[in-house]
Structures are given as C-alpha cells and as structure tokens.
Image (cartoon, rainbow, N blue to C red; front, top):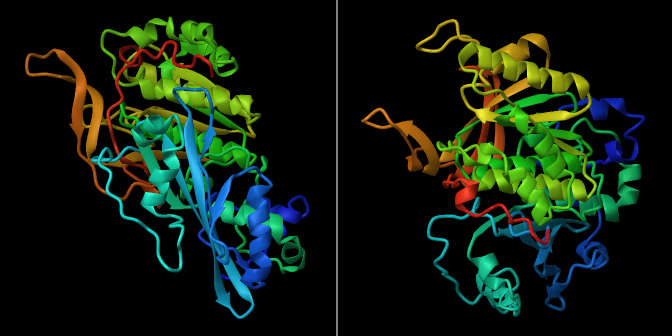
Length: 460
C-alpha cells in the first residue's frame, strides 16, 4: 500500500498485535509523504546535517550526497565506510517520497566482486546535475581526499536502496502523519533502538521474519568463506538495532567459551587478541575454515557492536573429539541450554550445513539424527536455513586421491542471485530446511594465523 501509517511506532505498547506479527526488518513498502517536495526536503536535509553528516548538493535540486563516514574506526579487521545518495521525488500534486541509496566499502573482502580492481567510470555531470552527485566519477574524486583511499578502494563494496533508513527519516520528520494515520495491518515495523548512530550495512531482506525474540535460527554454512561471517555480523547488528537481543553460536570447541566471552567484552587491545588466539583451535594442522580470518572479523565486529551498547552475546557449541550421533547430541544440548537461559533472545547459530537439518537420516546412515532435528523436537520456533551462494572459492578440507586430507582454496559452484544478502523461506520444510540465506559470490577466507590476525585489533 502507498499511504503508510506508523501506528505501531507510536503505540507499540498498546497495540500488542503489531509487536507479535512476523515482519521484515527491510520493508518492501515505500514511505510516501502527503506533502510536496518543497515542504519535505528542508526537513530531510536537516535530518542528515543534524547527525553530523557532511553533505554535497546542487542548489535548487532536491538531492544530496553525504561524504564517506567511517564506522568501527581504528579496527583493521571490522572497519568500513558508508555514504548515502538521497533524492526526493514528486509523486503527485501534494505527495512525495524520498529515495535513499546506501553504499558501503570495507577493508574486509566479503563483498569484493571479481574484477573490482578495475576502475571504469565516466563523468556523471549533466545539465540537471552539474555536480555529478551520485556518479562513479564523483565518488572517485571524493575518495581522493582520504588518506585511507587505497584501503577503501582496494577491497569490497555494496550498493542498494535502504528502505529501512527511508522509514527512519519518515518517522523522524513526519510525526503528525504518524499520529493521524489510521491503523493498518500492512504497516512495516521499523523500530530502532539507536538513532542512526550505528550502521549495519545494506538491510538483509527477509531477516526480520526469523531473527525474532525466542527464535533459534540454524544457519548451515559452507566453511571457509569471507561471506558467511560477514552475513552473520550484519545480521546480528541489524537485529540488535531493532531491539532484539542476539546470541551468536559458533561451531567452535566449547573449551573456547571463556576466551570468546572475554574477547567480545574486551577493549580489543593486543593482549586481548593474544589471549583469544593462543588457543590451539586457531592453529589446527588441518584448518577447515572455522578458524579463518573472516571468523576473526566476525568476533571483532561483535566486540565493536557490544562496545556501542548493542545487546549481543556469543557462545561455542562443538565438542571434539566426539563424532556422529554423540557429537550431534552434545551440540544440540548446548544450543538448547543457551536457548532455555535466554527465552527473549534470538539465537543465530552457524555450523556446517549437515548439522542444522530437521530430517532424519543420511545416505550412509538412515538413523542419523542431526542437531537441528534434535533441537526442533524439544522447542518451537526453530528455523533451519541452508546456504545459497554464487560460484566462487572457499577454503575447503577434502580427502585427496592418496586418501590424505588436503586443505586449501578450492572452487565452490553456486547459482547467481545477485550480490545482495537475503533470507528466503520455502513456506514449509524442504530436505530438512525451512529456507535459504544467500550471501552472493563466495571468496575463500584463509586461516587467521596465515593472515597474521593476532594483533589485528590493535588500536581498536
């Protein structure tokens, strides 16, 4: 619907039906103002300037571009940059909308596309846009003012429309509309606990349907990619920013539990990193992707988010040297214990995609009961999601022709569904999964010790 109401935002306590519905953190609906551009635009401009965004604009136009802003400053693992292109459009004689496009650039390689080192750009200036706002040439010129230019341009980027921020702006500058609008069952719930001071990347479509209080979300991954830990970091940030406490579960030996907890609660000093990385887990002679530099990035991102006041916790649930059914039982019991202690938290639990399945049997063992099935037998609201990705590479351990374990960068064949992260539910279970989480083109993440990650958080 195009005439939007925001009753859930102002009457969240009274309208319990709004709070109980499954919704998406990234709504498809557009925020449409019942005022013309000349009334809306000054307030939109003030929204960004009042939050200390430096802006560039062409006089006489309803468009602006913010300068790059760094988040997680000082961290060589989790730091990234973002900026916005904001354009107001007339929708009728007395109606308008504001379209916001968000661009992120990161020192992390998770979003780096093939051929990204090549720069192809044209001058974007036109008679209607003499400053070239929003063009690639304009972006390259802006980046030249940064001493960290090589870092920003040399890694990864992601660009997409940010409907969540559009609704944040709407909520801020259209309170009269929110108060007077009639209740609608189609209103998107965009409840923000932090006032846009924390940026969580381009909104993950469909995430809000599963990352809800009391839910257990089991993510079946392909080990050894940059993208899965990056997806998990952004998911935790976006859910926590919506007021959902998040606990992240990692397929890491549970003897590391105290190290993980202390690190995410630490200042990220060199000694904090040293205590985390001195565990034998990071120095396995057969690193299978669970101890990669991307996992170190994830832990650093969770630490930074906690430091900014978001309610995020982490736990380990693997139990080597157990294998088979015994291992699945112990992992399931660990997850269930954490869930029982945290009934109002969302659990995001990542493991190899054999473990989350909610169906009995394997081709070589018809009686096999995976962790996901064991958890779902005990509690409701357990969602199992299988990974989906575009063809790329991953750090994989596999048995070679000589029956020896061979670990390294190997091809990973997938299907192209674009580069934007999303969650898709099937509407039932298929092969033991309720849906997929898509992470774009995958790229291998090397073991953290190969990358010299131990002091990576210095200064962060």
